[in-house]
Image (cartoon, rainbow, N blue to C red; front, side, top):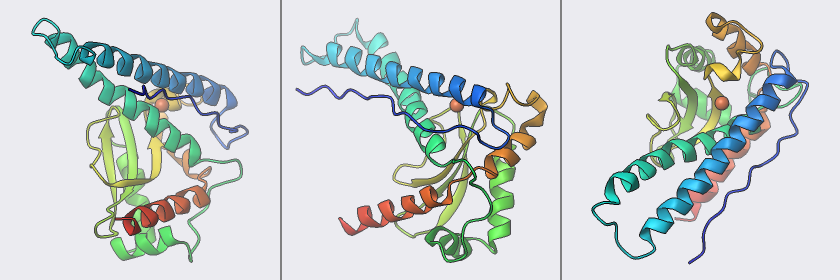
Amino acid sequence: MDMKIYKPQSFSLSGLNGISDKTLEMHFKLYEGYVTNTNTLTERIAAILSDGKVDQEEMPAYSELTRRLGFEYNGMVLHEYYFENMKRQGGGDAARDSKFREAVERSYPSYAIWKTDFVGIGKMRGVGWAICYRDPKTGHISNHWITLHETGNISGFVPLLVMDVWEHAYLLDYMPADRPKYIEAFLSNIDWNAVDARMKVEAMAAAGR
Ligand SMILES: [Fe+2]
């Protein structure tokens, strides 16, 4: 049996607008923790399963490890999407002729209304993420709130734009009550090419069915 081991990705992100290098370095370390924990949990679950059954005395630990894997795994993956959809001198609005913008304009009354909705979800109270997804069945775009890392993700939906709104994403740069300022900074660093590339990945996956 091959054990899948995840390796932390490195991101050449620095010099962002309104998100300090200090924040990014701390955030990369946190992300690496999710990768480590995902690997550790995967190994421990495999060890319990190695004799082909989950004994009754193993069941409480097995259940807890399995639930925690959902948290750690999503924490790992969402941070990868997040770091990948930012770049130095990014920001502005999605290009008018981009696949993403066209899909947004088919799904919302206007691009401006989509953007206001995304920002509004990012300001919702709680610990989690604002994510803009595409439904691969309909091509419809929708914004969602994710609690922690795992509650609210919709199976099969493709993340296009991912914004971390846990306080650790901005506490070194802003006061806790200033999340709106961090969101403004995030928007000014978006790598729209990375977002549009996710539309293509989704289209290829759909074509392969
Ligand atoms: Fe984070």
